[in-house]
Image (cartoon, rainbow, N blue to C red; front, side, top):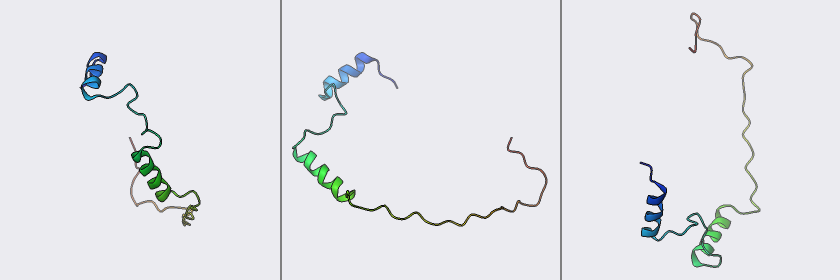
Length: 72
Protein backbone atom coordinates (compact mmCIF):
# COMPACT_ATOMS: atom_id res chain seq x y z
CA UNK A 1 0.00 0.00 0.00
CA UNK A 2 1.47 3.32 -1.02
CA UNK A 3 0.71 6.55 0.77
CA UNK A 4 0.09 9.88 -0.86
CA UNK A 5 2.51 12.68 0.17
CA UNK A 6 -0.25 14.27 2.28
CA UNK A 7 -0.81 10.97 4.10
CA UNK A 8 2.91 10.61 4.78
CA UNK A 9 3.05 14.12 6.23
CA UNK A 10 0.01 13.42 8.43
CA UNK A 11 1.58 10.19 9.68
CA UNK A 12 4.90 11.94 10.29
CA UNK A 13 3.11 14.62 12.37
CA UNK A 14 1.08 12.01 14.27
CA UNK A 15 4.21 10.02 15.20
CA UNK A 16 6.36 13.06 15.90
CA UNK A 17 8.90 12.19 13.21
CA UNK A 18 10.94 15.17 12.03
CA UNK A 19 11.87 16.01 8.47
CA UNK A 20 15.18 14.11 8.78
CA UNK A 21 13.99 10.69 9.90
CA UNK A 22 17.38 9.14 9.04
CA UNK A 23 19.42 11.54 11.17
CA UNK A 24 21.86 9.97 13.62
CA UNK A 25 21.63 10.36 17.37
CA UNK A 26 22.90 13.69 18.69
CA UNK A 27 26.68 13.70 19.22
CA UNK A 28 27.54 13.31 22.88
CA UNK A 29 24.21 11.72 23.77
CA UNK A 30 24.18 8.54 25.85
CA UNK A 31 22.85 6.58 22.86
CA UNK A 32 25.47 7.93 20.44
CA UNK A 33 28.24 7.18 22.96
CA UNK A 34 26.99 3.61 23.45
CA UNK A 35 26.81 3.03 19.70
CA UNK A 36 30.37 4.34 19.24
CA UNK A 37 31.72 2.11 22.03
CA UNK A 38 30.04 -0.95 20.50
CA UNK A 39 31.37 -0.05 17.04
CA UNK A 40 34.91 0.21 18.40
CA UNK A 41 34.52 -3.12 20.20
CA UNK A 42 33.04 -4.97 17.23
CA UNK A 43 35.21 -3.37 14.54
CA UNK A 44 38.56 -2.34 16.07
CA UNK A 45 40.69 -0.15 13.82
CA UNK A 46 43.81 -2.27 14.40
CA UNK A 47 42.14 -5.61 13.62
CA UNK A 48 43.71 -7.48 10.73
CA UNK A 49 41.48 -9.18 8.22
CA UNK A 50 41.67 -12.97 8.38
CA UNK A 51 43.60 -14.57 5.53
CA UNK A 52 41.54 -15.70 2.56
CA UNK A 53 41.17 -19.47 2.31
CA UNK A 54 43.11 -21.33 -0.36
CA UNK A 55 40.80 -23.19 -2.71
CA UNK A 56 41.65 -25.99 -5.08
CA UNK A 57 39.80 -25.56 -8.37
CA UNK A 58 39.92 -28.42 -10.88
CA UNK A 59 40.93 -27.68 -14.48
CA UNK A 60 37.94 -29.62 -15.78
CA UNK A 61 34.65 -30.79 -14.34
CA UNK A 62 33.27 -34.11 -15.51
CA UNK A 63 29.87 -33.82 -17.18
CA UNK A 64 27.14 -36.35 -16.48
CA UNK A 65 26.68 -39.04 -19.12
CA UNK A 66 23.70 -38.24 -21.29
CA UNK A 67 22.44 -36.32 -24.25
CA UNK A 68 22.61 -32.64 -25.00
CA UNK A 69 21.42 -30.33 -22.29
CA UNK A 70 19.77 -26.97 -22.82
CA UNK A 71 19.23 -24.17 -20.35
CA UNK A 72 16.22 -22.91 -22.30
